[in-house]
Image 1 (cartoon, rainbow, N blue to C red):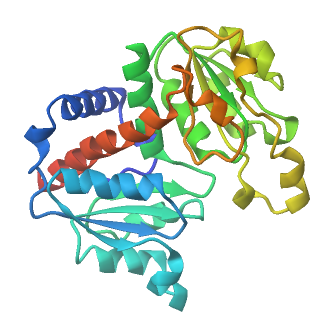
Image 2 (image 1 turned 90 degrees about the horizontal axis):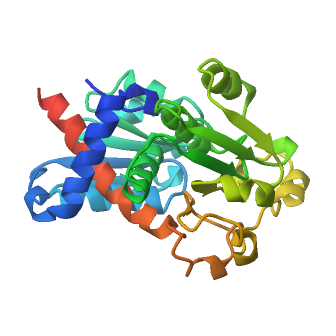
Length: 306
């Protein structure tokens, strides 16, 4: 049984193949409209979500399948104390594939031990968010025509940002990429990621707290919000939440072909005045999320059938 827990579960060849399938879905949607007729996706969301949950649902519907599930822990038997493993095993009796989001790191790993159907990690705490990374890779590929030889700026909450962690791991597998890591000292990327991924593989990176100084070098600017839900101390959150706010003025020295991405939701880290800039690609990024999740669902269901 094939699952997706971590972006590293997929080979580079598989990543490239899924990106090409997603592009084909965009070009020929009618050819995919009945690929999942009679199939059911269960969305087990123990943590709030808008884009991820709805994009999974839209993906399955556009493939001709159906969706069941819940959008918060309190509307499931988790509120009665049921374990993740039991929930997953139960739902596997009703569905052909599961997408699960959970606030605790490692919860999907517990789930796959008892799952009888393919399980997709739709985000586990501050750990991984592989389908957002697939979305990011598709977006970068469509915007730049390649996934290598790019200077990627990641800005904001690099400590708790699971989308950042997954994207660094994924883009580190393509040659010639350089990372500029922009954050306050308190929100720098975890040491394990720095050493295990970047330094072990001799990947060039710079840590800085100066967004404007880094801006002229960037091909991709990946903004993130400072996440209130990851902080134990409200005072620390309030002190750091406005560390970086992207405005049109801060883009004056940016490249004309810069692509600005954001996993969303945003709070105020990107001014709405930036939305009309043609370099702002975060709403197109949202749209890409549906197509790459369609490609992923097809892949996992096909492998389960085989």
